[in-house]
Image (cartoon, rainbow, N blue to C red; front, side, top):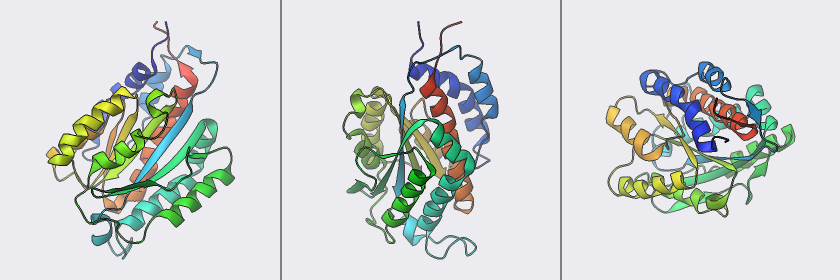
Length: 272
Protein backbone atom coordinates (compact mmCIF):
# COMPACT_ATOMS: atom_id res chain seq x y z
CA UNK A 1 0.00 0.00 0.00
CA UNK A 2 0.91 3.68 -0.12
CA UNK A 3 2.63 5.13 2.92
CA UNK A 4 0.69 7.94 4.55
CA UNK A 5 1.57 11.61 4.16
CA UNK A 6 2.61 11.67 7.84
CA UNK A 7 5.06 8.77 7.48
CA UNK A 8 6.40 10.38 4.32
CA UNK A 9 7.20 13.54 6.26
CA UNK A 10 8.77 11.49 9.03
CA UNK A 11 11.00 9.65 6.57
CA UNK A 12 12.12 13.01 5.25
CA UNK A 13 12.60 14.70 8.57
CA UNK A 14 14.04 11.82 10.59
CA UNK A 15 17.46 12.43 9.08
CA UNK A 16 17.01 16.21 9.10
CA UNK A 17 16.08 16.42 12.77
CA UNK A 18 19.27 14.64 13.77
CA UNK A 19 21.14 17.45 12.06
CA UNK A 20 18.95 20.10 13.70
CA UNK A 21 19.60 18.96 17.24
CA UNK A 22 23.35 18.68 16.70
CA UNK A 23 23.98 21.59 14.35
CA UNK A 24 21.26 24.23 14.70
CA UNK A 25 22.29 25.01 18.24
CA UNK A 26 25.36 26.59 16.66
CA UNK A 27 24.15 27.72 13.23
CA UNK A 28 21.21 29.87 12.21
CA UNK A 29 20.45 27.87 9.09
CA UNK A 30 20.77 24.45 7.50
CA UNK A 31 21.05 23.29 3.90
CA UNK A 32 18.96 20.13 3.66
CA UNK A 33 20.48 18.75 0.44
CA UNK A 34 21.58 15.45 1.98
CA UNK A 35 18.16 14.90 3.55
CA UNK A 36 16.39 15.58 0.27
CA UNK A 37 18.62 13.11 -1.58
CA UNK A 38 17.99 10.46 1.07
CA UNK A 39 14.27 11.04 0.86
CA UNK A 40 14.17 10.88 -2.90
CA UNK A 41 15.62 7.37 -2.84
CA UNK A 42 12.30 6.24 -1.34
CA UNK A 43 10.13 7.82 -4.03
CA UNK A 44 8.76 5.30 -6.51
CA UNK A 45 5.51 6.67 -7.84
CA UNK A 46 3.59 9.94 -8.22
CA UNK A 47 0.10 10.80 -7.12
CA UNK A 48 -2.46 11.56 -9.79
CA UNK A 49 -3.20 15.00 -8.36
CA UNK A 50 -0.96 17.35 -6.41
CA UNK A 51 -2.18 18.38 -2.98
CA UNK A 52 -2.72 22.00 -2.12
CA UNK A 53 -0.11 23.51 0.19
CA UNK A 54 -1.24 26.09 2.74
CA UNK A 55 1.69 27.92 4.32
CA UNK A 56 0.72 30.05 7.30
CA UNK A 57 3.30 32.71 8.17
CA UNK A 58 2.79 33.95 11.74
CA UNK A 59 4.11 37.46 12.42
CA UNK A 60 4.92 38.22 16.07
CA UNK A 61 3.58 41.63 17.11
CA UNK A 62 4.21 41.29 20.84
CA UNK A 63 6.02 43.86 22.93
CA UNK A 64 9.53 42.46 22.61
CA UNK A 65 9.44 42.85 18.83
CA UNK A 66 8.95 46.59 19.22
CA UNK A 67 10.66 47.50 22.50
CA UNK A 68 13.93 45.70 21.79
CA UNK A 69 16.06 47.52 19.25
CA UNK A 70 18.03 45.87 16.51
CA UNK A 71 21.68 46.69 16.09
CA UNK A 72 22.24 50.08 14.40
CA UNK A 73 23.30 48.35 11.18
CA UNK A 74 19.88 46.72 10.90
CA UNK A 75 17.24 49.04 12.26
CA UNK A 76 16.54 51.64 14.90
CA UNK A 77 12.85 50.79 15.04
CA UNK A 78 12.79 47.31 16.55
CA UNK A 79 12.93 43.66 15.63
CA UNK A 80 9.59 43.79 13.80
CA UNK A 81 11.36 45.62 10.96
CA UNK A 82 13.83 42.76 10.55
CA UNK A 83 10.96 40.27 10.70
CA UNK A 84 9.07 42.09 7.96
CA UNK A 85 12.09 42.76 5.76
CA UNK A 86 13.28 39.18 6.14
CA UNK A 87 10.00 37.81 4.81
CA UNK A 88 9.86 40.36 2.01
CA UNK A 89 13.39 39.51 0.85
CA UNK A 90 12.72 35.77 1.14
CA UNK A 91 9.63 36.07 -1.05
CA UNK A 92 11.69 37.97 -3.63
CA UNK A 93 14.32 35.22 -3.72
CA UNK A 94 14.34 33.40 -7.11
CA UNK A 95 14.57 29.96 -5.51
CA UNK A 96 11.63 30.67 -3.21
CA UNK A 97 9.59 31.93 -6.14
CA UNK A 98 10.40 28.87 -8.22
CA UNK A 99 9.26 26.57 -5.42
CA UNK A 100 6.11 28.60 -4.77
CA UNK A 101 5.14 28.39 -8.43
CA UNK A 102 6.06 24.72 -8.67
CA UNK A 103 3.27 23.64 -6.32
CA UNK A 104 -0.35 24.51 -5.69
CA UNK A 105 0.53 26.95 -2.92
CA UNK A 106 -1.64 29.27 -0.85
CA UNK A 107 0.04 31.84 1.40
CA UNK A 108 -1.50 33.15 4.62
CA UNK A 109 -0.30 35.88 6.97
CA UNK A 110 -1.40 36.11 10.61
CA UNK A 111 -0.60 38.83 13.15
CA UNK A 112 -0.39 37.60 16.74
CA UNK A 113 0.50 39.17 20.05
CA UNK A 114 0.12 38.53 23.76
CA UNK A 115 -2.95 36.77 25.13
CA UNK A 116 -5.75 38.27 23.08
CA UNK A 117 -4.75 39.18 19.55
CA UNK A 118 -4.57 36.97 16.47
CA UNK A 119 -6.01 37.84 13.07
CA UNK A 120 -5.38 37.06 9.43
CA UNK A 121 -4.40 39.90 7.10
CA UNK A 122 -4.55 37.72 3.99
CA UNK A 123 -7.91 36.98 2.32
CA UNK A 124 -9.96 34.05 3.61
CA UNK A 125 -8.56 30.93 1.98
CA UNK A 126 -5.16 32.55 1.49
CA UNK A 127 -3.50 34.04 -1.57
CA UNK A 128 -3.36 31.49 -4.39
CA UNK A 129 0.13 31.67 -5.86
CA UNK A 130 0.13 31.17 -9.62
CA UNK A 131 2.44 33.92 -10.89
CA UNK A 132 5.08 36.43 -9.84
CA UNK A 133 2.27 38.96 -9.73
CA UNK A 134 0.44 37.05 -6.98
CA UNK A 135 3.66 36.72 -4.96
CA UNK A 136 4.18 40.47 -5.25
CA UNK A 137 0.58 41.02 -4.17
CA UNK A 138 1.22 38.97 -1.03
CA UNK A 139 4.38 40.97 -0.34
CA UNK A 140 2.43 44.23 -0.58
CA UNK A 141 -0.22 42.75 1.69
CA UNK A 142 2.23 42.05 4.52
CA UNK A 143 4.04 45.38 4.07
CA UNK A 144 0.72 47.19 4.55
CA UNK A 145 -0.61 44.81 7.18
CA UNK A 146 2.26 44.61 9.67
CA UNK A 147 1.53 47.13 12.47
CA UNK A 148 4.18 49.73 13.25
CA UNK A 149 3.58 49.42 16.98
CA UNK A 150 2.86 46.52 19.29
CA UNK A 151 -0.72 45.35 19.64
CA UNK A 152 -0.27 43.82 23.06
CA UNK A 153 2.57 44.12 25.56
CA UNK A 154 1.54 40.98 27.43
CA UNK A 155 3.63 37.83 27.62
CA UNK A 156 3.95 35.94 24.34
CA UNK A 157 1.29 33.23 24.08
CA UNK A 158 2.14 30.71 21.38
CA UNK A 159 -1.05 28.71 21.81
CA UNK A 160 -3.21 31.69 20.81
CA UNK A 161 -1.62 32.08 17.37
CA UNK A 162 -1.53 28.38 16.56
CA UNK A 163 -5.07 27.72 17.78
CA UNK A 164 -6.28 30.59 15.60
CA UNK A 165 -5.02 28.74 12.52
CA UNK A 166 -6.40 25.39 13.67
CA UNK A 167 -9.86 26.92 14.07
CA UNK A 168 -10.00 27.96 10.42
CA UNK A 169 -12.61 26.12 8.38
CA UNK A 170 -11.86 22.69 6.91
CA UNK A 171 -8.35 22.28 8.36
CA UNK A 172 -9.50 19.45 10.62
CA UNK A 173 -10.91 17.46 7.68
CA UNK A 174 -8.70 18.62 4.83
CA UNK A 175 -6.34 16.49 2.76
CA UNK A 176 -4.32 19.61 1.99
CA UNK A 177 -0.85 20.10 3.45
CA UNK A 178 -1.07 22.73 6.18
CA UNK A 179 2.16 24.20 7.53
CA UNK A 180 2.30 26.70 10.37
CA UNK A 181 5.50 28.75 10.41
CA UNK A 182 6.06 30.53 13.72
CA UNK A 183 9.05 32.65 14.76
CA UNK A 184 9.52 33.46 18.42
CA UNK A 185 12.10 34.79 20.87
CA UNK A 186 10.51 33.13 23.89
CA UNK A 187 9.63 29.60 24.98
CA UNK A 188 6.20 28.53 26.23
CA UNK A 189 5.96 28.46 30.04
CA UNK A 190 3.30 28.61 32.73
CA UNK A 191 -0.24 28.78 31.41
CA UNK A 192 1.01 29.03 27.83
CA UNK A 193 2.87 25.73 28.21
CA UNK A 194 -0.24 24.01 29.61
CA UNK A 195 -2.46 25.27 26.81
CA UNK A 196 0.18 24.46 24.20
CA UNK A 197 0.00 20.81 25.27
CA UNK A 198 -3.65 20.71 24.23
CA UNK A 199 -3.11 22.72 21.04
CA UNK A 200 -0.05 20.65 20.13
CA UNK A 201 -2.10 17.45 20.38
CA UNK A 202 -4.85 18.99 18.26
CA UNK A 203 -2.37 20.02 15.55
CA UNK A 204 -0.94 16.51 15.38
CA UNK A 205 -4.45 15.07 15.14
CA UNK A 206 -5.20 17.40 12.22
CA UNK A 207 -1.95 16.39 10.43
CA UNK A 208 -0.80 20.01 10.66
CA UNK A 209 2.95 20.63 10.55
CA UNK A 210 4.38 23.29 12.88
CA UNK A 211 7.88 24.61 12.18
CA UNK A 212 9.68 26.92 14.61
CA UNK A 213 12.32 29.58 14.11
CA UNK A 214 13.76 30.16 17.60
CA UNK A 215 15.38 33.59 17.67
CA UNK A 216 18.10 34.33 20.24
CA UNK A 217 17.29 31.09 22.07
CA UNK A 218 20.85 29.74 21.80
CA UNK A 219 21.67 31.08 25.25
CA UNK A 220 19.20 28.69 26.85
CA UNK A 221 19.07 24.98 26.09
CA UNK A 222 15.90 24.65 28.18
CA UNK A 223 14.08 27.27 26.10
CA UNK A 224 15.16 25.41 22.97
CA UNK A 225 13.91 22.11 24.38
CA UNK A 226 10.54 23.62 25.30
CA UNK A 227 10.03 24.96 21.78
CA UNK A 228 11.21 21.70 20.21
CA UNK A 229 8.83 19.55 22.25
CA UNK A 230 5.83 21.77 23.00
CA UNK A 231 5.49 23.83 19.81
CA UNK A 232 7.19 21.95 16.97
CA UNK A 233 5.20 18.94 15.79
CA UNK A 234 6.92 15.59 15.14
CA UNK A 235 6.68 16.19 11.38
CA UNK A 236 8.10 19.69 11.68
CA UNK A 237 11.51 21.19 12.33
CA UNK A 238 13.08 23.79 14.58
CA UNK A 239 15.74 26.23 13.45
CA UNK A 240 17.71 28.69 15.52
CA UNK A 241 19.01 32.12 14.67
CA UNK A 242 19.65 35.57 16.07
CA UNK A 243 18.14 38.92 15.29
CA UNK A 244 21.41 39.85 13.59
CA UNK A 245 20.92 37.07 11.02
CA UNK A 246 17.12 37.10 11.15
CA UNK A 247 16.65 37.66 7.40
CA UNK A 248 19.00 34.81 6.49
CA UNK A 249 17.25 32.46 8.93
CA UNK A 250 13.82 33.38 7.52
CA UNK A 251 15.01 32.60 4.00
CA UNK A 252 16.43 29.24 5.11
CA UNK A 253 13.23 28.15 6.87
CA UNK A 254 10.94 29.12 3.99
CA UNK A 255 13.17 27.32 1.48
CA UNK A 256 13.14 24.21 3.66
CA UNK A 257 9.37 24.29 4.06
CA UNK A 258 8.74 24.68 0.36
CA UNK A 259 11.28 22.04 -0.63
CA UNK A 260 9.74 19.23 1.35
CA UNK A 261 6.10 20.34 0.95
CA UNK A 262 6.45 20.46 -2.84
CA UNK A 263 7.83 16.93 -2.92
CA UNK A 264 5.27 15.59 -0.47
CA UNK A 265 2.40 17.17 -2.41
CA UNK A 266 3.32 15.43 -5.67
CA UNK A 267 4.80 12.11 -4.58
CA UNK A 268 3.80 9.01 -2.67
CA UNK A 269 5.96 6.19 -1.35
CA UNK A 270 5.39 2.48 -1.60
CA UNK A 271 7.27 0.14 0.70
CA UNK A 272 10.22 -1.40 -1.00
